[in-house]
Image 1 (spheres, rainbow, N blue to C red):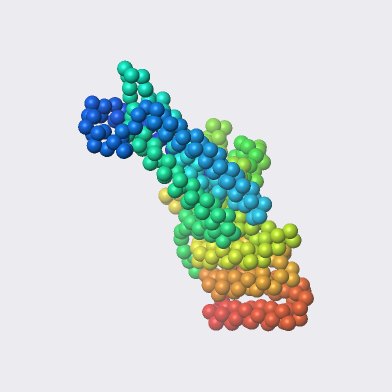
Image 2: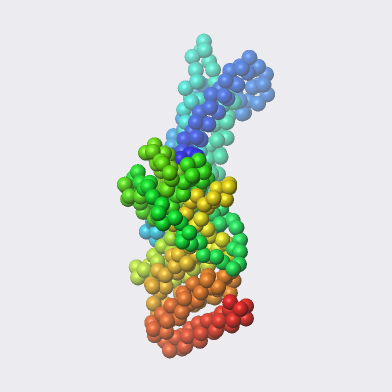
Length: 442
C-alpha cells in the first residue's frame, strides 16, 4: 500500500502523467465522433438542416483541422516555455523547494495536456477524411468539434497567462504551501493534547532485548513509513520496532532505518519490514510537516538575503508559519504506537513540538539581526503562540524563543528609540506570560 501511495505521489507530481491522460482521452474522443459520423452517413437531411455547421467539404475540413493542429502545437510550445520561465523565476526569487508545487499544479498540467490533446485530436480526424469522388467521407461532427476545441484553447490560453501571473506572486506561493502544511497537521496529528502533557519515555524497554537492524536500501530522505503495516508486522511477529531517524532526515544506504526486536526473524521478514519505509530523493509533505515549514523558511531566508532584501516577503513567511504552529499548538504529537491489543509495537523518532518551533524560527531569527520589521513580526508570532500554548512545556519552548529574539534586538538594533521600544515590548510580553503561568498554577 505504501508503494502504491508513493507511485501515485510521483505521478501526481510529474509533468507528463495528466497531459498523457488528456491526449489519450482526445484520441478516444476523435475515434468516437468519427464512428458516430459514419453511423449517420446515410442521414443527409440532418446535415442539410445545418449547412453552416455540418456542410464542409473534404478540402475545407482538411484546411480547418490542419490550421487548428499547427496552431495548437505552437501554443503548446509557448505554454511549455512560459512554464519553464515561471519555474526558473520561482527558483531564483524564492527557493527551489517550491518548484514541486508548480510541478504538482493541476492547472499547469491540464493546460499543457489540453493543447497537445487538441493537436492529437485533429491528427486523428484528419487521417479519416477522404476526398476521392468514389469514397468521399467528411466526419462533419468531428470537424465541428475540432473547431469548438480551438475556441476552448483560446479561452484556456488567456486563463493560463492569468494563472501564471498570479501563481508566481509570493503571497500565493506561501499560501499554497501553508494550505498543504495545515492539511498535514490535520492528517498526522488529529488528536487534541490531553493535559497534563506526559513524556513518552523509553525507560520501560527491556534492556536485555536483542535488536536487529532494518537497513536502508538506497540513499535518500525518509519520506514516510506505513504505520498500519508496521503495527500489523509487530502483531504477527510479536515485535517492537524503533525508528532510528525522523521522517525528513537523510538515510544512507546500508545504515539502519530502524531496529526491531523479536524472538526470531529471517532475512525475508526483515526485507518485508523494510518495505514499510519509503526513501526518496526529496522530502514530501505527506508525512513530513517539517518540509512544509522548511519551504516557507527558505522563502523567508531568500527574501532576507542581501541580493534580494525583501523584508515584506519575509514578514509574510512568518505570518504563515504562525498559522501552521497555531493549528499545531493543541495537537498531541505521539511517537509511540500500539496495536489493536494495546501492545506497544512502534516507537518513532520524533517529530516534536520543540523541533517544529525551532525549524520555523531559528534560522529566520539568526538572519534578522538589526531588522526591526522582522523582529517585530517574530515577537507578534511568539506572543500569539505562547498565549495559546496548551501545555507549560510548550509555553516554555516559546518563551525561550522570545528571550532569544529579545536578546538579538537589544544587541543588534542600532537606533536607540527602536531598541528601547523592542526591549519594552519583549519585556511586557514575557511578564504577561509569567503572570499567566503563575495564575494558572503552572
